[in-house]
Image 1 (cartoon, rainbow, N blue to C red):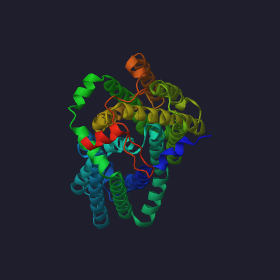
Image 2: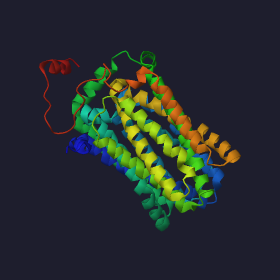
Image 3: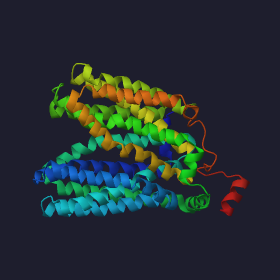
Image 4: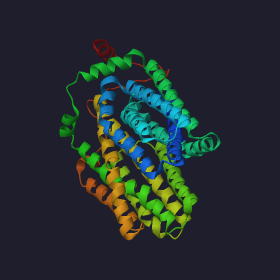
Length: 436
C-alpha cells in the first residue's frame, strides 16, 4: 500500500518547517500553562488573568489581516521569521519579569499585546508557506502532517510544561517558549535559504499582478461562503469547548478536573487521528462534498455528548467528533490553498481566520448566557444544529459543492520545490523564469 502520509517528508523544506513548528507549538503549550499559574499564584486573581488573555486575544485577532498582507508582500518566510523573533523577545522579557517580580498588569498587558500581535502576523503565513514547499499531490498530506504535529505538541506540551513549572516555576517555562520561537525562526531561515533565488523571483513577479483581496472576493463569492461557514461553525464550537464542556464536567457528569482533562485529551486524540487519516487518504474528486459530509456527521456526537450517561461515553463521542472535524478541516484548508492565487493566499487565510477568531468572544458569551439559564446540556445540540444547518445551506450552493476541484487559474505552476530531486523544466518555463 502506498504510504501517502509520508510523501511530504521527501521535501527538505517541509521537514524543516514541521520540525520548527513542533518545537514552537510545544513551547506555546508551556506558555499556556505558565501564564495562568504565574498570574494566579502571584495573587493577580482571575480578573487580572482575564484582562491579560483579552489583551492577547484582541491583539492576535486585530493583526491577522496585517499578517496576511505582510506574508503576500514580503513572502511567508520573512513574515513568520519576523513574528518569531518578536515573540521570542517578548517572551524572554516575560521570563525576566516572572523571575523578578509579582504579576502586574502594567507589565503583563503590553507583553501580551506584543505576543498576540506576533501570533496574528505569523498565522496567515503558516498556511501560505506549505503550498510553496510541496507539489499539488503532496499538499493534502502535508497539511495533515502539519496539523497532526500541532495536535501532538498540544497533547505532550502541557504535561512537560506542568512538570517544568512544578520543579522550577513559570519563568523557565516562558524562557523555553522564547527558545522555541528562535528554533522556529532558524528553521524558517534554513527554508528560505534552501528555496534560493527562484522563490524570491517568483514572488516578485506575482506581486506585479493587479489583484487585490476585495477584487478576488467580488470575483469569487465562494470565499465569502467559506468565511460564513467558519463563523457559523465556530459560533457553536468555541462556547461548547470553553464554557459548556467544563460546566458539564463540573456539574452533571461529576468528572472533576481530571475528567475534564480527559475529555479535552479525547478530542485532541480524535483530531490527531482525523488529520492522519486525511494524510493517508487520496485526493478526493469533490473535496467540499466530502468535508461537508464529515462536518455533518460530526454534529451527531456533538449533540449526544451530554446524554450518553457518563464521562467515558462522552469521551468516546469527543473522539468521534475530533476525528471527523480534523479530517474535514484538512480537506477544507487544502481546498482553499489550491483555489487561491498564490499572491493572495496570505490575505485570504488571514480573512478566513478573522472570522473564526473574531466570533470566539460572541460564542463564549452566548454559551455563558445559555448555560446560566438552562444548564450546559442544552448547548451541545444547539452547537450541533448550528453546524448542521450552516453546512446544509452551503451545500445548496453550486460554488461550494464544486469548491476545491481545480486550482485557481492564477495559481503558479509548478510550485517551488526545496528537496534535492532535480526539476525538469520545459523550454517555455525556462524562458518564463528568465523574463521574471
